[in-house]
Structure formats: C-alpha cells, structure tokens
Length: 169
Image 1 (cartoon, helix red, strand yellow):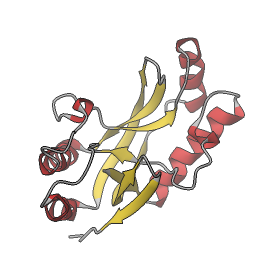
Image 2 (tube, one colour):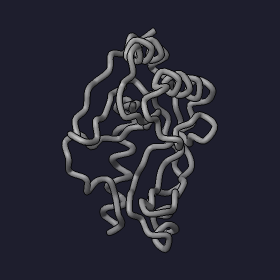
Image 3 (cartoon, one colour):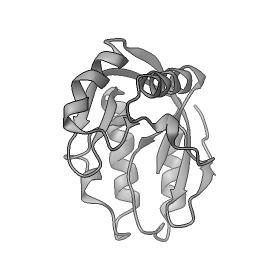
Image 4 (cartoon, one colour):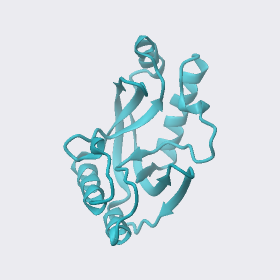
C-alpha cells in the first residue's frame, strides 16, 4: 500500500533523484521501470485479506493529507536507503495504523508495524555508508510541503500497480 504525492511533491522528489544521479551517486532516477514513482509505503502484505479493500477505501477518505518532507535519513544495511522523512502528523500516523489493521492476517512486514514505522520517501538505494554525507550535501537542507492525494497497491512479483479509489473529503 502506497501513498502518492501531488504534483509538487512528485516534482520535488524527482528533482532530488536527478541531483543525486547528476552527482554520480545512487539514485531512484536510475530505476527505469514504468511503475517507479515517488511514493510513501504505508504497509506491505502478501495479499489483501477479506474485507481489506473496503476498510482501506474507507481509510483513504482521509486524503488529501498535508505533508512536509524535511530531513534526510539513512537506513543502513544491504539496501542502503537514503530517504526524505515525511511528516504528516497524527493524520498520517492514524491512516497508516488503519491500513496496518486492515491487512491483519496477511503476512505483514514488521517494519510497518505502527510503533516501528518511519514515514519516508526513498531517494536512493544501494547507497554505501561512505556516500551518505555527500548524498546529504547534494540534496541540501530544503523542505517541501505538499499533499498525499492518491494511493495504489504495488504487487512486487508481477511488478504491477493498481490505483486505489480515493473518496476525498
């Protein structure tokens, strides 16, 4: 389950991807699959359990949701991810918890358990620890305000996306 940003957020993230790529650093700008676009992952699961689509659709009525991308975070490990931290306040955390609950019993990934979840939009993968400082310098200290205005489901085996209905307020 992923949230998609409005045009301002999408442009800002893609510009950050380009800055990293132009600096010769790992960047999601290099990921050319047609499904690649800036997004915030709310939760992952092996499947949609019965009733989940209805519950998710009801939860998505919270969109559009204001968000600020501010501050960078490096997630070390095999993936080496650099990400923009997404601050949507209690509204974003509440939405994520609702989505998590809707996917109960569906093989959810523990990193998305609400107490462990770190809301972010990835900028680079396979960034080595020694590249972190340079990547942060390239992105710079800028903050971006916008809205999450759409949602989709990403099926990783077939690499397909399904837009999810958003009944805006």
